Image 1 (cartoon, helix red, strand yellow):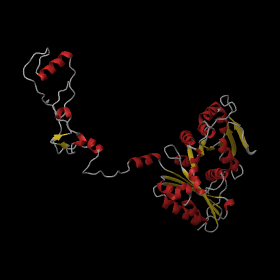
Image 2 (cartoon, rainbow, N blue to C red; image 1 turned 60 degrees about the horizontal axis):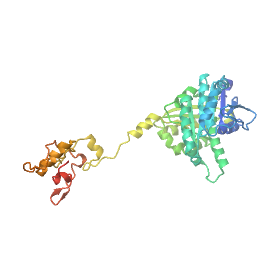
Image 3 (cartoon, rainbow, N blue to C red; image 1 turned 120 degrees about the horizontal axis):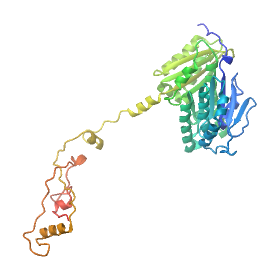
Length: 431
């Protein structure tokens, strides 16, 4: 088959600014500044100074509130610092067509500043896409909780959010590696995701994916999206890329693809990338994502000769997920022994005679009480005989069902129904 038409980077037609927020965001910027993000502007945003390459512009959001002590791990302090410098953040975002925000959620700076920065970028007309990581389980549930709150705020502020759960990424590494290497590996994974989307937006090829399509895929109402970026080389590059993609741990071994309702896939190759390679990859993706709307893009760059890079972003609709969980069929109930909920919803008839109960005695005055006692004892209130002793009788009350116990056999002991109150069985008068 004929090769794909060659293409070149879009260059200055797409003005991109990449903001690294907080300590984790700064580490990502350090990796990116050494890569192939040609033409991008790198800006580090934090509440205190950090060691970053000279190519990265650094902005410190110091305020009287912080007093040089940083956020102390509190997102609210980071948010207030960003709000105080909101106009400055808007100026930094000015002139950009696209703003990337990279950060780690769970701490104070990245979690608190990122949503405010995303709002500032949107107010100046830039399309905003955030790449964030969630904490490892070992970092504690407090950071996990803060990260989830920050993620929800970021989703409302940005055009789209691509999220990497570090705990899921841990499946790709040896548990015996050092803590420093572990964080470095997850940082690299997120950088690969940013690089994949960067190539998608800044390279024009035979089949283009526009940013509005990417924004629609990641818009509010969807879960945080999963992504994977793989690369292969040689004559079997298409087959190798497929195998890496399907087995990718960030896609749960392909399970994410089966559940996704929208998938975006971008292929980048050299001038030798053929339609056969593209067909082979897309046939497998379409097979794995039968329920999803699939958006595909392909571009060619001379630097990718004999190589194939595939970036995939998958999202599942949040509403559909909730409906699927709430409409899950329940186990059939036992017809011979219906549960309490069943009796509340469906009236059932009793097979045995219902019990009769009486309400508590009404309140009596002192004179009425003496008169009643005198009648039952055969004496007058003043000690005089007052006719025969009266006997207690049963009130003629309406029959009251015993509800769920109607089908229960009565407890009979020596000819007495023990389910009846003692004062009724023994004829005891109520004072």
